[in-house]
Amino acid sequence: MGVATLHSPAPPATDAPPRRRRRVPWLTIALFLLPALVLFSLLVLAPIGLASYTSLFKWNGYGGAPTDFVGLGNFVQALTSPIFLGDLGRHATLIALSLLVQLPLALAIAMVLNQKIRGRAFFRLLFFAPYVLSEVITAVLFSLFFSPNLGLANHLLGLVGLGELGQTWLADPKTVLYSLAFVMTWKYFGFHMILYLAGRQNIPNELMEAAAIDGGSPWQIFRYVTLPLLAPTIRISVFLSVLGTIELFDLVWVLTGGGPLHASETMAITMFESGFRRSQVGYASAISILMFVIALTFALLYQKFVMRRDLEGAMTGMRS
Image 1 (cartoon, one colour):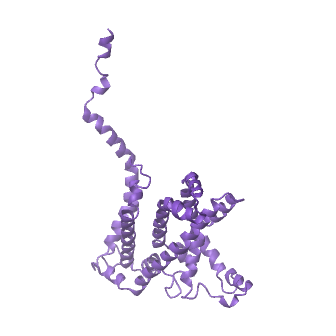
Image 2 (cartoon, rainbow, N blue to C red):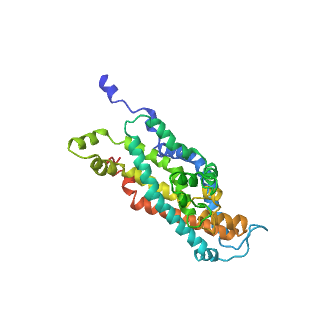
Image 3 (cartoon, rainbow, N blue to C red):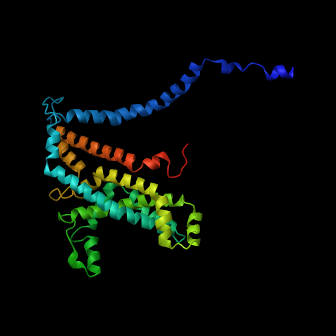
């Protein structure tokens, strides 16, 4: 009797047709993905398609659908425009300043605030606070800070005996872009600091202690242990910083409006000015498509050549 029980047939549930068992997960997956796919199509794919279509016309946005087909004329106009080419140069300058100033500053402060010092929780909160402020509030705040007569910037220079260096920071084409980079650093370095802190806290302290026992100096431990293990976080930080700079709009719009003489204008500002103030909707759509192509190309190339090891999990050797 016991043998017969051991060799009894399988439960009826396992006798169901294999095809039916395979369909259930796909149907469930499709139902869960459907809301996200609908939203993505309406809010991302549809605007891209509409902008791609209108970019092929000379259109002011009024009088129904566009009819004056110009092909790639709007793209040629943008790529030969000194303003748009200047935008590309200004983006390159802001990206370089972000990578050379903002991110190293955030990394240095993160390493300091990772130490057991008094009040580090307060300082973490204090340095992260600017990131919580909206871009509009930040721009209004720094428009007062850089005011040539009553601003704190010139006043502080005067207090330390450098009053002759006082400037009309936001009204001078030679200083406005660096003033903007200063504001961006103040606002966003706290965000990158938090990223670096999170990355550092994932590194076991035993590695630092072993390096110290082997005679490594603090700089050598940072250079040869901390920095390589923090590399995936740094790559993510650089990725977000570059994409954020490409999309930069509201902070610049409120702070300088792109002036003076286009000296702080970005691609998004040029697109907005063309579409909503000059009624060149077709041309503005072409600029938006160029911005999209630049951001998408950077994202794909960066993920393929820089973040490939991170995406494959090679850094941790934990392939699933």
